[in-house]
Amino acid sequence: MTITVLLDPAQMPDQSQDQLDFDNKMSGLMRDLPIWGAQANATEANMSAAAAGGAYALTYTFDAATADADPGAGKLRLSSATQSAATVMRLDLTAGGQDYTKQIDTMDSSTSVIKGSIRLVKQGDLSKWMMFDVIARASPVGYRNLTVVCTDSSSANPFAAGDALMLFFQRNGDRGQPGANGVLALAIATIASPVATIDFLNIFSADYDKYTIEVQGLRTTSGGAALRMSLAVAGSVATTGYAGPVGYGSNLNTFAAAFELGQVSSGSGQAVTLTLEVRNANSSSSTYKSLGVRGIGLTSDYTTPFALLAEGLFTGTSAVSGFRLTVAAGTFAAGTIRVFGHRNS
Image (cartoon, rainbow, N blue to C red; front, side, top):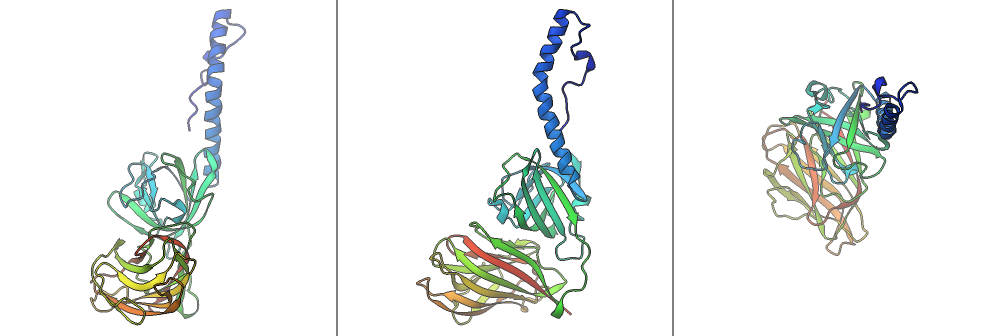
């Protein structure tokens, strides 16, 4: 914020002036004094926010749309109407009128699984903020998609359309050696309010070839919903190439657009726990990428648990970049999702 009033000493009242000139300048002073105060407060807030920032501090305008598209010059948007449930942050390549393509493209340059952290703060109101871990970056034309996990926020929806935001980015250091057995937790997400999809579309990489997705306490807003899993290629959901699944407790039909993994969630108070596996995610073969599910599902009365075991194949000829979970009816209401990567060697 730039202070634009009360800057000209010649326009200040002075006792040496004649009465009419003094009165006119005093009137102007009293008129502009509240404007000066508001501009000074906004400037102080911006300086305080910048002082608490990280390596990058970029100015954006919040766009309330959620679609995967360029949010527009100088704008930022999130992938969910419930801002704290967003898994993708979409950044225009310009911020504050400047081109920051090179800086944004370094936000995933760390070799750590969590590339860095982003703090979003509303300019002029530091009580409205969000914190995100950055997992990956995709590069559509004209903007960038950052795969993120919200780690904390002042509320579920702290920002309104048109809000001026400061984005602070702090890069993580490069990854050290992983823990025992070469297994590393890549992301953890908790559903705190209804969401239609659970998206991790860019979480897979060449560092890991098998992924385990642990789902705990999964509930939906309406009963009788079957869990479905779609895989992503280059950050976009693949709508073809699925075969199966087959197995006990699963629907034996073939679903072209996703894996149908059985009756696994309910809106009647019952929650389910299951494990999903995506194997050979980096393969370009049409026969070696497979998916499995095991855990506790629910029968058609939505209350009786049963063992769930199913297997399927993805016959696409590209490496898999991530996944999406959906339900056949309603939305996800609660649950925790943990994604683990298993090293190739």
